[in-house]
Length: 153
Image (cartoon, rainbow, N blue to C red):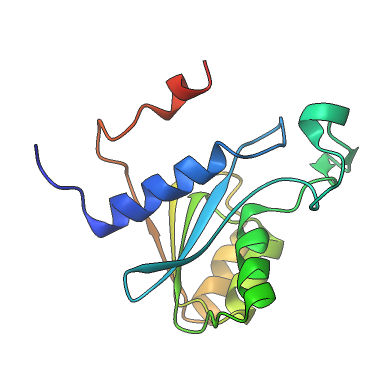
């Protein structure tokens, strides 16, 4: 057995977090890392104590579920809540960040974004990452780590 890389390890953590998602449209996980240490994790879901998509259905406006807070935002808010600085950190996300998450990632001082799946990669998000000198890299999970598709069956 060969050892997985740090990037694969942190991406696997994000895939594991995605299994906690409460939105039925897409399960996303995000792991924020600094100096090879996990400082926060998030998944897409409703506000704490609120109605969840898996219980009440998605609340869709303009083809977006507005009941859901994105995984990246949840991870960043966890850092804010507990006073953990995100400057110079990295984030591992199961899917390419949306435009709003892209802007939040930049404002939080994240220096690198790793993602596993291309998902509606917005050209302006790509441009903003470039302008802010945030590196973006696609990470493939080494098989077999965990077959995440079979866990929920």
